[in-house]
Image (cartoon, rainbow, N blue to C red):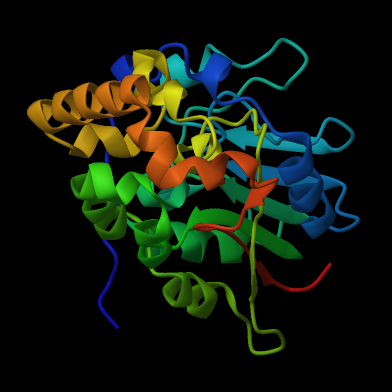
Length: 259
């Protein structure tokens, strides 16, 4: 198996306004919190602005970006400046851990996953994307370069499953349905609302666009805007507007020891 390549985004620039665009969607949140089981202490690695952190448990948040740490709401614990590859915790010190849409950013994915295993007694909940599934999204017809970048950056799902499995328990995977009115502005959140891609703040909060050339992004925005004005987008993809949810690339992997 080829080792996946982790991305690296400068959130001191692209993270500005992130919390407004990437709010936790309650339906996705329910899946994540259920996967944490009855854990009372939860480690959130790559915690960012705090999306999907449970508020009814003791949370330890780790986040390397100062820009992201500053966007955390006041009712959440302050995040510790640290990285997944060197967690400042003792062995088996937390009941559960979570890493939500972050593993593609880690400099050393192998080391980060090993650290999660080291410090976690129970379930490890990772939310990521299946790069191969991105090609099914209509966006691939407009900007295949984005799909190619996603496939390169997103760790293979079977790689994550292998690293998060234990001798007693094989990690599980399920597709996360993206609701039509999803408030977490991941790329697929706007499968039925293409107009949202014309907002630069939306694209700025989606890290994969950082790996697409500026002229490609400009071509995409101009072409999409023209197709929306002419009705061409709706002629080709209008059925997407009526889908109550989209089962695309988002996956939730639950490993470690079962809670």
